[in-house]
Image (tube, rainbow, N blue to C red; front, side, top):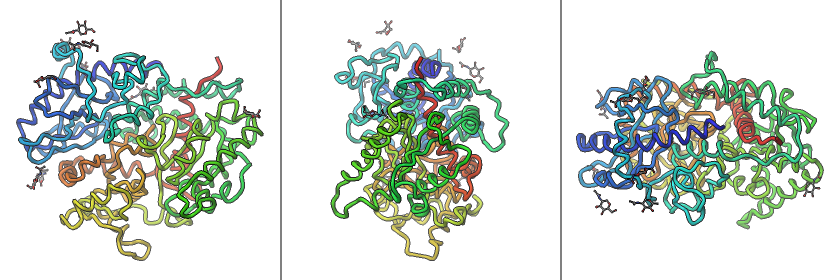
Amino acid sequence: MGHELQYILESKRLVWLVAVVFAVVIMFQYFEFPYGDVSSSMFSVRRAQPPLSQTNQTETSSEIPKSSGNITIFDVSNHTKPVDTLDEGNNIGIEINIQSNDSTTSPPPSLSASLTPPTTVNSTVISPSIALDNNTSKPEVNAPDLDPNFKKPATSENNPAISVGESPVKELPPVKAIHERPIGDIVTIADMHDILLHNRASVRSMKPQWSLMVDQELLATKLQIENAPVNNNDRALYPPLYRNVSRFKRSYELMEKTLKVYIYKEGEKPIFHQPQAVLSGIYASEGWFMKHMKESKHFVTNNPKQAHLFYIPFSSRMLEEKLYVTGSGSRDNMVQYLKDYIHLIAGRYDSWNRTGGSDHFLVACHDWATDETRKSMDSCIRALCNSDVGKEHFELGKDVSLPETYVRSTQNPLRELGGKRPSQRSILAFFAGQMHGDVRPILLQHWENKDPDMKIFQKLPKSKGNKNYINYMKSSKYCICAKGYEVNSPRVVEAIFHECVPVIISDNFVPPFFEILNWESFAVFVEEKDIPNLKNILLSISNRRYLVMQQRVKKVQQHFLWHVKPVKYDIFHMILHSIWYNRVFRVNPVS
Ligand SMILES: *[C@@H]1O[C@H](CO)[C@@H](O)[C@H](O)[C@H]1NC(C)=O
Ligand SMILES: *[C@@H]1O[C@H](CO)[C@@H](O)[C@H](O)[C@H]1NC(C)=O
Ligand SMILES: *[C@@H]1O[C@H](CO)[C@@H](O)[C@H](O)[C@H]1NC(C)=O
Ligand SMILES: *[C@@H]1O[C@H](CO)[C@@H](O)[C@H](O)[C@H]1NC(C)=O
Ligand SMILES: *[C@@H]1O[C@H](CO)[C@@H](O)[C@H](O)[C@H]1NC(C)=O
Ligand SMILES: *[C@@H]1O[C@H](CO)[C@@H](O)[C@H](O)[C@H]1NC(C)=O
Ligand SMILES: *[C@@H]1O[C@H](CO)[C@@H](O)[C@H](O)[C@H]1NC(C)=O
Ligand SMILES: *[C@@H]1O[C@H](CO)[C@@H](O)[C@H](O)[C@H]1NC(C)=O
Ligand SMILES: *[C@@H]1O[C@H](CO)[C@@H](O)[C@H](O)[C@H]1NC(C)=O
């Protein structure tokens, strides 16, 4: 962890340098090609202001995952060449932002550019320009930025101790800080990356009240992951898909070798212990996880003293089904039910009190679960479909984004897997769904029946086995995953299932396995405010880049598939792994 922290500090310095160069280069480009497509980013350099005010402005930018003074600017459009560098493994994908079509009068809402390791600009070149404005960090109202607490003293009244450049060693509640931002600010993928690193470096779970072997095992595991050998010889793991494939591989191996899970026997059916009630439909991931977990001979232990993790085996879907009083609008009884359960096990086993619940976990896909588990299980690792880092109290580095999977056939969850070859995908973009929430109506308003390339519909008419919908997914290049009432949607996994590149329009959504996967290498993230530009954004992605992403979607697919019997690297193991990984990195042994 120490070196991650150091890395943050170092790269922060770099990032400032880089940001300034960027601003200049982008401004340059911007005037050179007023209608040009200003680019993709792994690394969004954002600005709320017109480029002219550049000398006065501060850019907020994310940490570069791989810090180097080496910068290349490239463009996903036809204008520029270095797109080749895209596939070299180290790039952190793309996040597209496009300017409005008349750039001379209305500056882009957000510009972004890309960094890749190959050098063209030397960081030392720019240091003079940094010296010009020492005091640039004024909070910009509209700039979607990082966790303000560790970037700058934006909320200094609340956090007088924190200031620019100070090392983020304090325990800060970044999610809370985000709640305090001005309305309208969003947490981008790059921001999430920073928050994750920050939390990893600074937040530990409670020290155990007394020591057990498992604490030492977790600590040893953490060191082994941090020192993972860099060679990757596992052909099942394609490096560009991962934040760090060596670490993932090592962590996964150690999980297989070490991890033991204790499952509480308490709790009544069907809310507890009845996975078969929830094996199909959109909440299926909690049912399938419970089924596989309970059946696992490999991971389950009956001795709580040997357990690294404790599973609270309830179904949020059944909780709603059994306890929600229709029309009451109240979840209080469900919250109470879970609280009583925790009270019960905390009284009966000493494992809860030993760690304050921080080695306990739950896996829940119902939208309400995020809120329902917030009080009594706040210390637990919560695997949740509703992984909203803005509105809900979802804590990066502790909680896990659970994939929402729509399982159509319990006997054969792989039915209809796959889709057409890229060359046969004739539709640019597809969406169909009910008008839940406030984003979809905007999507429809701009794109329903507006453009033959954009197949954007309300709910499709019923067809046998939903063939119609599935055929669209199989025949489209991009599948639009627009949020519903909540950030999550089964479309993300459906798109991957049918080998369609997901286009996620859901601000603040933490995508599944965010700890592990480099999402921007195979998916497109579009901010809700950019819906009017959706088609331009998609067209600005070169065909070559599209093919790269589509290929990666196929390679990442294995991590999103349920099997009747679990297999290595499948979704069951990935969920368990993310829980494990977060536990390992928050371990806080009695010293
Ligand atoms: C810089 O900011 C100051 C005050 O914020 C403003 O008066 C000045 O016009 C700005 N300069 C430029 C070049 O925008
Ligand atoms: C840029 O990268 C090249 C090779 O990738 C490396 O040799 C060089 O030292 C780097 N330059 C800087 C300034 O980091
Ligand atoms: C973009 O172009 C279209 C048609 O050319 C025009 O109607 C629209 O107002 C433009 N949008 C902006 C933001 O300039
Ligand atoms: C680039 O950086 C290296 C070391 O960081 C430095 O020695 C060299 O002079 C720099 N090049 C330029 C053109 O500034
Ligand atoms: C900028 O900050 C550095 C270190 O904090 C200081 O040495 C330098 O004098 C400052 N420059 C200006 C122009 O304020
Ligand atoms: C620089 O920042 C410090 C602390 O925020 C402030 O006291 C000082 O007035 C600023 N200097 C300038 C030139 O804005
Ligand atoms: C991945 O992690 C390992 C172990 O911490 C580290 O040695 C390696 O440099 C990392 N690789 C990349 C590409 O960041
Ligand atoms: C755990 O702590 C609670 C509250 O302090 C207490 O009521 C309970 O008895 C403790 N559990 C055990 C097993 O000691
Ligand atoms: C890119 O080039 C291809 C053919 O070279 C052309 O069909 C396509 O429209 C171009 N795309 C953009 C965004 O300019």
